[in-house]
Amino acid sequence: MGSCLDKSGVTPKLRVETQVYVVVNDENALDFGKLTEHGQANGLHQALNIPSNTGISVQYAGSTTGPSYNEKGSPYKVSWNVRPKIAKVNIATVGEWCKGNVFKEDHAHGVRNLVVNKDLLSNF
Image: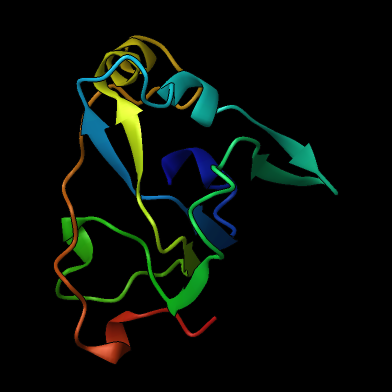
């Protein structure tokens, strides 16, 4: 999320296209480095290698993630599109990706509680 923010303070509107992965110890599972390759299409940043066999994404009302938004709404406008089937990713490739990537991600982050209060979701 931090890599998407505009340093000028402009609040972005984001569409998150999501794939849920199970991390497995299997060298035949998907390569996380390849899955995270990205580029631009029509001037918008896109994930290039989202698996095509995990179903058509379902759109959810959303907000940003993270435990800091458990009790208050996020100022960021986000819509979530989640594919209904999981995919398996090789844990070794996740470790390699964490050693160096354009997003400077190197560890897991806190997660937000299940949102049951609709006031904490984006109106997007």
